[in-house]
Image (cartoon, rainbow, N blue to C red):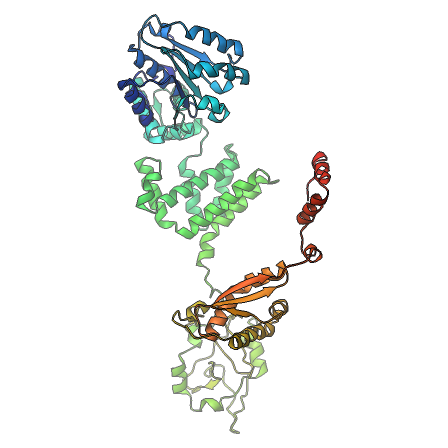
Length: 611
């Protein structure tokens, strides 16, 4: 064994020069420029997360302004480090104030580095104020903290503030590769990426994990070994569960999640990790955002390939479901069930996307030839076509009727001619929008029985009794807004406006929307320029009209041929009794407090809420 004591990497490879500081180039460049121009402030505040180089930069700065080398022993007489966490009393600050008056024995400046300065007491801060604002010319204070918000504003105003940011993953990986090369450790780049991501921007944490992993696995760090030792779910798990979700493989995804739980991972960790994976897939969909992905080139290629198969519908829906599960996880009584339900929901996204509006069992195409072909084969005019008997209509409405029980229909003709009963083997009953037509029985095949029809877009039996089937091309319902011509500018009179308004009210009445009918029948609208002004009595009616505003405007514009019409709602002034009828419990409580303020004090004293 070596006689030299073991040093952890965080101390062994602590930067001794500006160019060795990782990930803080903006701050180091500013400090170097201030030294070169001899613009040394009396106080600096270095703030930021742990392990990002605050104390290291303070030491380098203290040496640089005095011109000391890294191994110069004279630094001990000019640079003083104080831990404010254990020296936070007024007496500790007073001792510093007394020492500041003494000039340095060597060098030009005496530098006081106070770490974790936010731990000083209120009295210690106050005792430090005057000295910090007007120290001797040879004194420089460097304060370091991880919690800048806890420092008094009077202290902040006396310091030059430098905000240290988290170390980026690529910078941390590059530094770890440098140390691994010096230590003779063969480390995979993906393994170092996992360490850097786990450190969450703190380089000291990354170096501590690096030492721990080297102690466990020796001189070779693999991706598999690092993920196992750091208890991190590898990206292969998320690639696999995403593939299963894209293929709607719910059983496979459930089994994979069970394996993850069996390995001791937290279900919440699985949710957040998968959400980050879907976020990375979203980033890979555009070359402009690809730089936001922090991963090795091999892993980036995997993300690109999977992003090609994951569309926006899947990614946005998955992120929304995972975010909802993340919010509800802590308060859930059955956390595993919550995650499993989220898993099944995401695995169902592809199925929901493929399920169109026309989903369902439709009449086979062979049974619905084009109308022109039906007319060519028919020997009778359309007006003489018979109506379908009620028993045939019932049979089509009931798809469960067996073929053997299908009734034989005798169709009477309107001209007194009776068509023979159709033979199930060679006759076919044609259906169209205009009525039933009988084709040549020698050429028409048997009519296949419909297995089911959608009620929303198709009526099986017309009011006249004739059979109707869905056309080959479904009619597209136009958007009502598209019917408005922006060039319409007809003059609108109050009489025409009232007539159109009554027409819309009658339309609501026909639709049995009685509450809205009553609201719109209160009084006649008024015309003010291009604005249609309507007055309501209370907030409830105002809310009803707000929901109907778009429909009313479209109807008025199309009826009056004026595309510039606007609808403005007004509400009548109400008495206190009328307002009370529509007040919420909170509003009523506020009215009571306005009359008697002591009521609110009583509520606070008893720690009551409004339910």
